[in-house]
Length: 571
Image 1 (tube, rainbow, N blue to C red):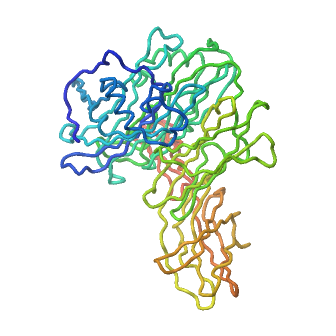
Image 2: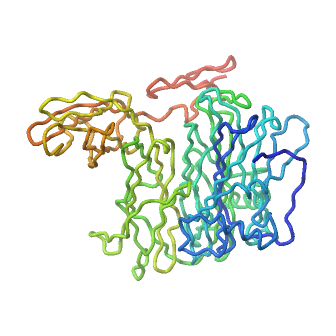
Image 3: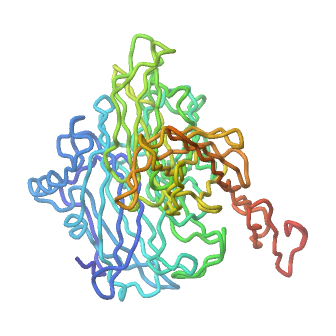
């Protein structure tokens, strides 16, 4: 399928669906099988008024299912290819050039797959994850970035807005190879709810989970001007009243309804722009100075409704913190238990949702009772990543009580799946041995993350390996779970799923004792716990260059001829 750039102007047909609440887009790009083209894969998170989205009369029983056929049937029934909105492609302009937009709605409709992530029947919305593959003719975008835009109209007339508001969700695509990765750019990936019920008189802190598979530095900001589009005046009102604020670097949104001009029943929508910056100077479609010039950007849109007292359920301990990071090496498992309890004692938790940004179903248990708290329950999930999963992922949880009220925010986890290097080791006659054992620099985990990796042990003695345990020589508090694995089709091994919280930076020693029925073997490995990039804080004034030392323990500012001082602060 080819996307041609044609000068055209789109408008909605006579009976569009004004039912979009919010969502966001991200993209990745790769070489296309079509000569002179590049394949752009869009991941479109889209939330709709219940029964008005691509699911076509959705219910909770549809969660986790692909509903593309229903989308196509709805388009046929309405005889309107733009019934779910318009898709456009616009090349980045230079100088006095006039905007040229291509309508690509037909191509999107032909190459989209929709999966239902979540349905909230009480609040009346549904959330789909859509994957779209487009082949872009590069001769029409020579040396340029371009925007791919989805355009629809918000479901309801927002408070302080006299008319329905046009919604624009977009990504800026830079399809040219970066000089650092030698590959095209990948945009930031965001996962947000499209619809939030927020109680009047309350204040909320909502983390926005963001990952980037190029390991770029990420910043979030409340959209303004062109990026806010028709919501510009509403965003200005929200900021002037101090209703909304955002921590740019942490990507944490604050909604303050303690003292505002809003009343119960009022609604507002908030667009957030997420930008990615390279950590070193690079060239792609243009020159990007590290931490200064964004490579791309995506827009997320969230819809808020002010309610009376609803007493939504809450996530509780021992659930790991929201936005907790995990580093998982292939062969290791990611698993987590999420606990929640109702705020109102007459209610109970009846449902959990685990959401993956790519729409893939999550392997989860049934709801279990917490033995310490009679109101709390928990659910566990497990994921065993394979080589095709290498990269960064977001998995989020939502809880719902018996009154149909959901937790306000999603509770999310960021998982970085890394390649596990196979390091074969010789067998030891009459003793256990480690069939594969990591070398230094094989296991590198960021400070503050849970680090999980496999270690393989085998023996020639009957009965196999009995246990693999951490010894007193380990400087980390390690937990170990077991599984079985066959290496090279012949070596039957016991796998130690080793996990620890990377709380101290630098090289960290972990020693493991493998035991069979007659002997034991101890080996030690070094795990590197990496500090965060000090240049991410932009310590050098006036956009002067920051260079971090190899272990991120310090940095140096390289000043231009107009500035001096340790931080280039003088000049």
